[in-house]
Amino acid sequence: MKTLTLDKQHIWHPFTQVKGALDPIAIVRAKGAYLYDEEGKAYLDMISSWWVTLHGHCHPKIAKAIATQAETLEQVIFADFTHSPAATLSKRLTDLLPGSLNRVFFSDNGSTAVEVALKLAVQYWQNTGEHGRTKFISFEGGYHGDTFGAMSVGKGSGFFKAWEELQFGVETIPYPETWEGDDGVEEKEEAALVTLRQVIKDNEGQVAALIMEPLIQGAGGMRMCRPGFLKKLEKELKTSGILLILDEIMTGFGRSGLMFAHQNSDITPDLVCLSKGLTGGFMPMSVTIASEEIFEAFLGDSFDRAFVHGHSYTANPLGCAAALASLEVFEEENTFEKIARIEASHRKALIGFQSNERLENLRVQGTVLAMNVKVDDEGYTSSVAKKLKFQFLKKGFVIRPLGNVIYLLPPYCVTAEELESAYNVISSVLAGQTP
Image (cartoon, rainbow, N blue to C red; front, top):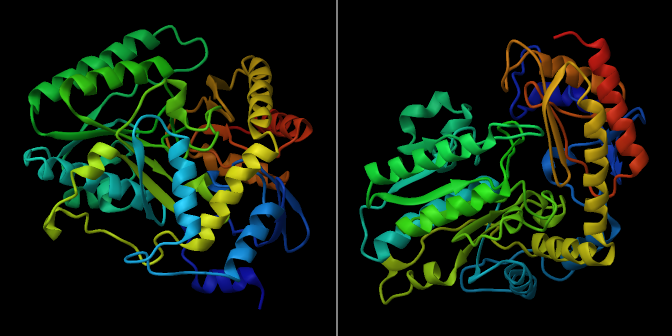
């Protein structure tokens, strides 16, 4: 029985209104920047398969690392036990981060990495005697995952109305999104900071942490802010003694131009959430990395001070092996030179897109290029998204608009010629596509 037949009988796909949806494409293999379906048609994957694939599909070094590890140790309970891949990976990750961010808590995906950070923040304050600090601040448009804590701090994304009554209270402040030629960015940044100060004042002694996606809001529409805003934000939080949680699940591992997005701003968060590109796109894994100060607040003689949280596959050795291999690829293949070339190509293409009357709010950060299609129904549910996605797929490109936002976020192995073909297909589809 063909894959699509079985799929239609049994599978429920994510972020999809199944009624009226396009038939899913059965992919049988992948290599580099390409996916191949059952008929042998190639698709250029320009969104890194939901932002996870860093170095290209089926990278041989990562595949070999997983296979070798599978022959040695595939899984062990991570309570009472440890293993070399986890210990080595923890050291490698913390060496890349600033300050005293050197305590790594493993989990399975981005949502749970955020959930861990939220729980750590609240219990940190409880363990230090400030039991009133249970509130969070997040940004309008921010998305942090689909578990209940992550949904609560991501309520500004607008995705979770069905569960509003079950979410905990979060204060949401404006996000100073910007783009090329934006003359009003300074006013937007100041308005966001003014709102932040007022929220802190109105909730004095009650805020545990602020959470944000640094520089780029992913699912919210690849909305970008300036590095300098993060620096001002950090100053406000430090003055008020509020923890800063950075959700680097999408922005981590080179997407912003540097290894982590917050490094563009030279700030030091208290907690960092990583996933997606952590294993190079091979294995589900995430980490929440905490400062030494936060870790020490959980030490004590009683179990109630401990962090009571865990997952069956915490620190899975196969995932750790994949992550270590991916970090080695960064060094062996001069990956940051590739990232710089992608950004330079995006910026060159941006000049051409600026003359397209159907586009506005063009922006680039690292390997991310984004642009808004002018339509009457803006936002994630814009009707133009389905039409554009269908046209891109017909032409052999995986470009999946976020509503009326077209974006590219390619794997680092992408060539200049492949990027040029993606820019050209966007222009050609827009020329023939009506809203």
